[in-house]
Image 1 (tube, rainbow, N blue to C red):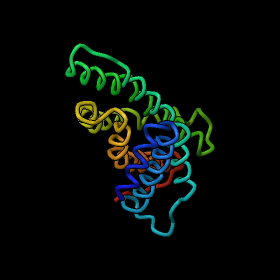
Image 2 (cartoon, helix red, strand yellow):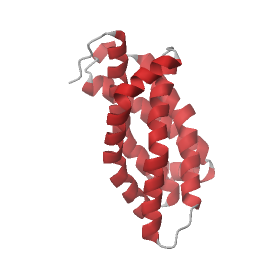
Image 3 (cartoon, helix red, strand yellow):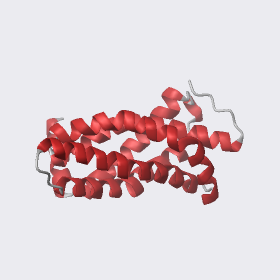
Length: 188
């Protein structure tokens, strides 16, 4: 296990885009599996296309953005470490998060084969509650991340937190999709 972690750590340093995109694909897919099996109790009725959509979103759409975002944040210099933490968390949660939440619901709508006009309906009902919950999870997580985690490992830290967040996002998106289709989705 230690050699696997060492290899992954090396890959994060040498090939951050590839490593972080692959990590995001796996964790978004895993979050969807958790949402379908642990929350929605789908069992054998698992929607594998939904899992594929979430994995694709994580690896191809979200991964590159977040990789470049962390590279940008890691280059910023501040007069004190405390100011650095505060400003990086603020930038992450006031600039990136609102856009990424909207990007997620818009992307999922399109990946489900629906017109962009339907993304507006999904956003109007899910955006604000999702963003508020995001802040409840990621403001403290990012403060800890920027305070104590080495720069090349920040994506990994937030990815572990994101596994559970991705489970929530998947379940929320499925609930919105079901509401649009007039289906009563049972979430336990």
